[in-house]
Length: 286
Image (cartoon, rainbow, N blue to C red):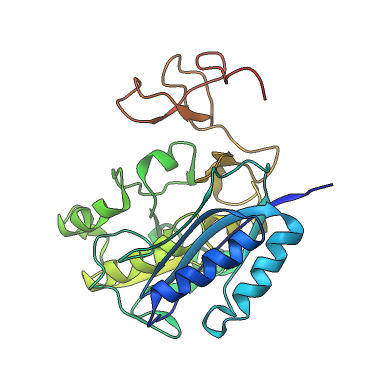
């Protein structure tokens, strides 16, 4: 019986020939019938792919055989077998689109000048030492935080990652520059860049949650400081870390608590909206 799995990983490292890496990654993933999205730039790789567990394991082994990717932090989760419509492997100026490719510097150790890495347990140690001084700073698009976020987090009003640069440059968060700021995002990749951008703009004590919300949820489930569901960019739309996950979102039609995103463009003028099953039922059939 096929067991569908999804892997999420990234690696910041200089790549002299991104196109060659693209061709290799496409061949490797396609040969194992994987689907998903792989982005490659001169700064490294960012990938989310899925398929049968045996095929995904072969893909991971093949990817790690390339020395610069050997120590990539691979995050595993259960899939459904229909999480991605196709395989897409592309070369882009950035593997996360902040619109600042020339500001990001990488070496073989990763992003240069980023925040101090905190493990999930390290985050709790910082909070034990600094208490209410610590600020959680959400590094995701604002709609993702509607269904889940760290308790008391600052959630910038951004619709795309590219908007973070203008928000930081606006001075809106200058009052946080002397406080310990912990950036977080889904798997950690956006905060690698965001924390460096913040430090470049004078934020003095910047941290990043290593492994992102995914690693924190694996460690503490719903018994820590995370509240709600985690939005994911695949067919699952959202995942919970336990059956006790809080429901923070509200249906945009009727106001019922929900963590369910669906395509519903007439609501709020965007493609994805929070809607309950009663207001926007899924199509009948397989």
